[in-house]
Image (cartoon, rainbow, N blue to C red; front, side):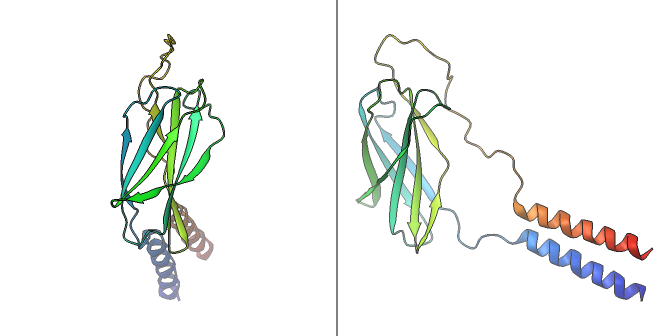
Length: 170
């Protein structure tokens, strides 16, 4: 009887471990972005160019742009369709708010009825007036926020069930 219980426990732990290891089949797109000019001035226009490598056929690419007074205080964002030109996606944006010091952008890639969204990236604007406000010392850290994935939670739950199961049988 004890070997049967151990076998059930091992199977439960194995299933939990396998669920935690599974990954998404399609790889994330690789996006090479160019901004022209690299440091646009306030109230000017800039062109954002995205060279996208993706395993699946891309139906459309949208860019969401927000003008911000600083990195955390942004006006409403707007989404624009990007145009495919010579194998790269482009969009020219006119900055409209004179209080904007940062422009944030992100992409939405639509492919086969599903979409992939990127994290926000920041463009720091060149000041055209005598404003010497240098509170933002360079680009923001756009790394991940250290949150574990859902697979870790599944693994921890399966281990907890196994421990409870063993303690009940003793």
